[in-house]
Image (cartoon, rainbow, N blue to C red):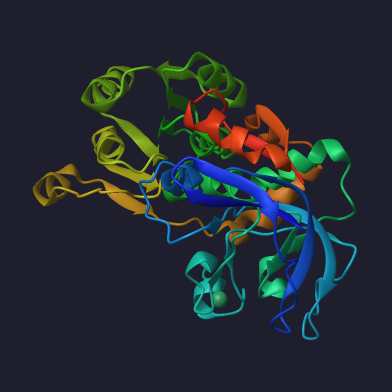
Length: 338
Ligand SMILES: [Zn+2]
């Protein structure tokens, strides 16, 4: 099969790779209908996460089941399925509590920017659609695999609900889909923090009511000005830097919630400031599996169109251009057709 491999900073190549095979009897092999490049893939791409040798890339996937192991019961060949970046048994105590991304048997799923993918713990990890989807639904179903599920978790972790004022720090795909999640979850006012016009436009389409262009402490002032000096009830942090995390905490009113879903890089929190903030923090790698059945249903019934975040579509062979476009912020998110 063909698959994308990162050889070093800004060096992505699509090359021939071994087809994945069933290793454990709980595995499934799927043929990817579409895959994509994640904002978090840019950390190793930029050399900010050390990569040990050539690394197969990608962790977002949707496609048709080709083969299942002998112990797989609920998933069968021919089904269209969506899974997430952590495989989970969906039966342990942590999964049952909705934290499948902390499953006691969790395994990372990687190597998804390719034609075929091995998914461990298939019964617990994969969710099948009612039928094979029409082509135009595939991008939205793929978005559910990570960026929608992650934005949704950010909104849930930030306790978004009816009557709430929500601020979203970060205008990447996850931040934009946190806006969409906040609207779906009934937020009254949704403030998107973005200085990029095409992203502002998409945020408004997804349900943002206000835009704040400033960032850092100037962005905090912007949020306070829109909230009678109090701060937002719910703030989603979707970047993962020191500046964005403090921006999120300082934009939240006492008693409010921050849902942090940007992968933290070098974030250190000041204890004294936290102590006096009265802000609740929750986040981490999103338990996307918790939300997949509901998200697939909303997409299937065309109530949500998260696939709009893909503003660049390329054949898998041109994955390197997808990385370049996202690195240079020419694209929000690149979809790759295998
Ligand atoms: Zn589990």
